[in-house]
Length: 552
View 1 (cartoon, rainbow, N blue to C red):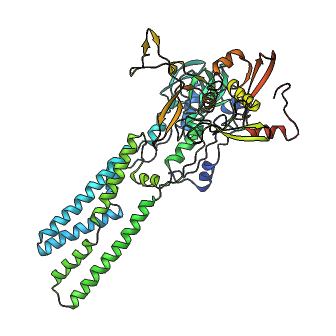
View 2: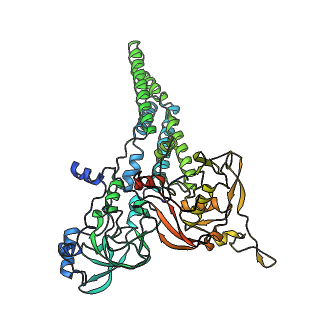
């Protein structure tokens, strides 16, 4: 397969510098992985440390004292630059100052000699600086919304227990020790430890860890890593299913999301490659222009040229060396590219970022769905044969030669059976029938018109490939498996004959899942497992083998 069975939860690496200019120790602490001990702390000891009561919550006096100590439960916004200052900065970069200076010299020349050419050139230079500054300012203003996206993660109201009574309170007024009640559809208002929860409680942590599926939650600690354990819920995540009662352990900037937001908003902007190149070019041009202007000023002065004529001549030489069209050309090109990217649902934070992205030769990511369409395809398979293990190609856009596997091979049949049964993905029933533009089923003689499993699609290079027309529902890796297996052996039929008797779901700690089925041919339980090969080797320690009796 192209990737492992499931997307792995990755601990965020905080690798930026806060804008608040923290001390070196504070900066190093923020860059570390998340370190917490609250998930392993005894609930009784935590109750005493927080000064709360799990049955009645905090008292009104305690809440007032804690609010004065910890402040509001919100992310600290970055220092705002006034919109007028932002506009002025767009008009006063080094190259713009060079054009401003050239325009002023043109007006000086016009005042000394009265030539209208200098007047027109000065007006053109001023117009160029203003127009390009406005282009850049408008584009950058469209993308200045990072803090707003974080602020939207805070719910306006939350169900809190205080003084033994339960009521709705502003989430911004939560304090450590508050007892919070969360139901399906709610946002988690702060980092909290679960005290009680329903059996079906799940939390969507995609905004925090990138995990594409909602994660199971319970009140017991299940892992030393705070981002892996199941008894913590984090600020900004969502509860798609279930309900729970929890105690707040961190609020605002002290939450895990707060640490990430603080670093993300305080990143060192630095100079982009195009900025460095343009600045270097301007330094060279400026040095040449000033050198030539002063040189001819001295030569003409020695030659007895009148000082007004000599000064105007020097101004003409300096202005002639200024590339008036460069800043306009660069800004317009970057703006047009940014607009094209916007039409493709790509938000450009600043115009220089367009050039930086264009200079990128390789982007590495192990998160399916982050940079892709979250669609996976089986490209190669590995199974045993007479001469040991063999790697075979499957029919996909990655293998132009087509499939090379042997469907009659016993090991291949066992692999296909495992991919079918140890799998919970299914095909969307609605995608199996034709629909019109309004999404209604197309009827023929009163019956739905079925859609063929495969359809032909033309690629960008003009070649035509065969792709699956039915839409799978489920994890991307498992969806790839059933798309591969179904043409060989009907997935629904195979599962109907041997339904699962027991299931061990996948989790990021064990990195495997197990399904137990009754084999109708033997009327005995058989087990299928889905896991990366390195996990099997690591757990077997090289001294145990797994055998399947009376099976190939």
